[in-house]
Length: 204
Image 1 (cartoon, helix red, strand yellow):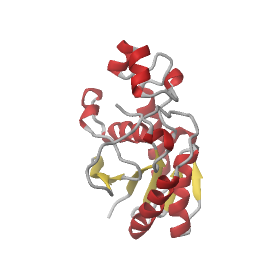
Image 2 (cartoon, helix red, strand yellow):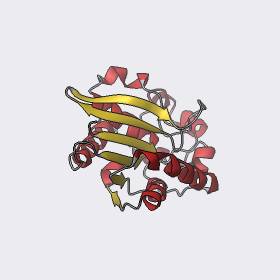
Image 3 (cartoon, helix red, strand yellow):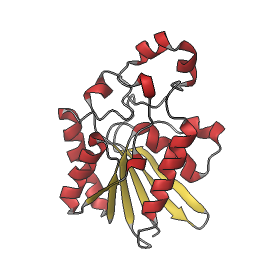
Image 4 (cartoon, one colour):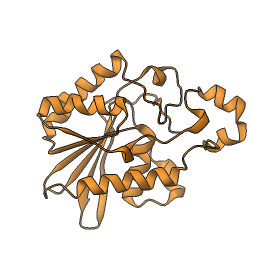
């Protein structure tokens, strides 16, 4: 086996339920989100992670800590794994965003928000940096956010930006699995851990 990365999205928050753009706002998991994190931890423990790292935002860090407790690993924190910054959109619903910024809503680019290319670059760089610490057969779990993980995965796979929308979003406490091969990283699983259901995320 080769090095692998499990990209784990955080559990549900109240703002997920209310369809509010979270971005860098530090929203905690709700009761359902904590239960999701516990369930995901019990499943991912079977993969025997060797390293766990999370975003510095509580919703991702608490999701990672649930796994760390089960597998008895410390959780490292990396600010580069934060969600995409939404600027003035943070805390607003999609309906509110569409009403105030109709043109920007179509492209899902907040005027003062973080460009998708910058998110993809910083998240992929962080994943590479932590994966470099793995032994040859090690498994890294990265607990992060919907848009951040999808964009980071696209960059890590070397997909052209015009094809990034082909990769769907991640549900709360669902994950994707990447493996390092001779020609780079490849996607083994995507949005695993749940039956198909609508994804509520800052992602478009």
